[in-house]
Length: 302
Ligand code: PPE
Image (cartoon, rainbow, N blue to C red; front, top):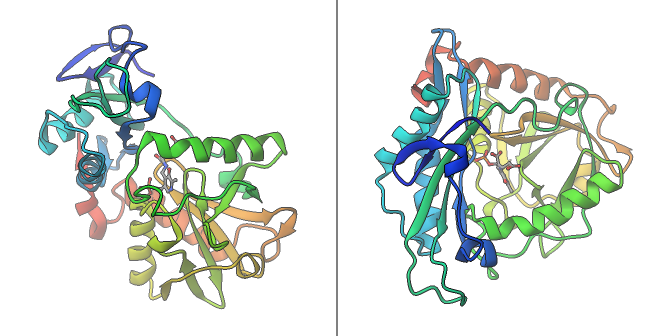
């Protein structure tokens, strides 16, 4: 992480942005967070990609969990810009987090006021070489929890204990990433990415009902596909459909567009990143760097 962290309303040295070991969120996972990227643009200035949508999701996640953020959406958006600007970053990964700060033990927090921090760091390719070569993934033995267990549309820290298990399992087995199925057995998403498949020129992605996090990158890609004249269908995807796809790729703020070329050693298509995936990778990277005027509305300059 970088030197300056926005912590409860002001920029402080990272060493000062610390919490007590009694913090409610540490014991019970009661925090919500965001992952946002800033990119160095053609205007020779960094811009934050879809900042407003991320900040909005942050507040919705907090509202669902009744975590009381003592700041406005504008203040958090400004904090995101400040950590990029004041740390002198060009490309940055920004991580706002709001956590139940009470140090009183007990699940039922009487005081649900949040501590809030916004961190920033430089974060290259999320899945490393897989961005170019394509990811080799495994289907996790751990399934996504259903939306009747917790609100899967919220980006809450506690939810990630499931992703953690799946990611560790995949890593130990020598894969780049895991794909999780939902409780019914349909394809859900990666540990930190949404998934798309392409079959006969049509793109498919699992629906909200498949316990996915409704990704902002997923939304971006659906818009870009639509504008390219490619049909996108949200529907339940079976493992068989995934394995017989022509192409597959992950989307996410951190992962951007990362090809998936193998699932449990079965090649997807010819086992190389597909042509539509490549095209989207390039287009996404142009869009976030402000190279395409049509999509500049998604950029908020720092
Ligand atoms: N599903 C999950 C489970 C998820 O964590 C992410 C983001 C997505 C889908 C894609 O959402 P979006 O970023 O809005 O397109 N994962 C974040 C966390 C990565 C991490 O390892 O930490 C991210 O990409 O920032």
